[in-house]
Length: 157
Image (cartoon, rainbow, N blue to C red):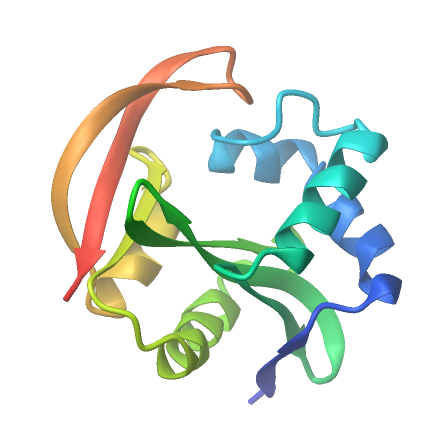
């Protein structure tokens, strides 16, 4: 079984993370993405802001030492939310679930919130297996799809 681990995001990770976050199928599944996933300047500005924010925990996700994504928590309107992005090349291999379990051991804030496109069955399955419960849905604009879609809202107590 492959070893999944978390570590600090390094400058040398940014090119790979940028590439992962602009993969067309990944962007479509995530739905709630940057307005223009190909805008490197916007990505760099966002990452600089996130990496220096005191209320953000950002980690690189590795599989057998190779970078395969990122996971983070951040505060929005007083609620701590999590988000993750896993390279499509390793979808379905347990990486997201293991990374989330490791992250939940590290970030002890509860309740913790998460959101996913209502049709993103894989991400919803990962969140539910980690103990998140669906607490509602919202209709929100999804930049990656250019329309409003249903977003599932989850919570871990």
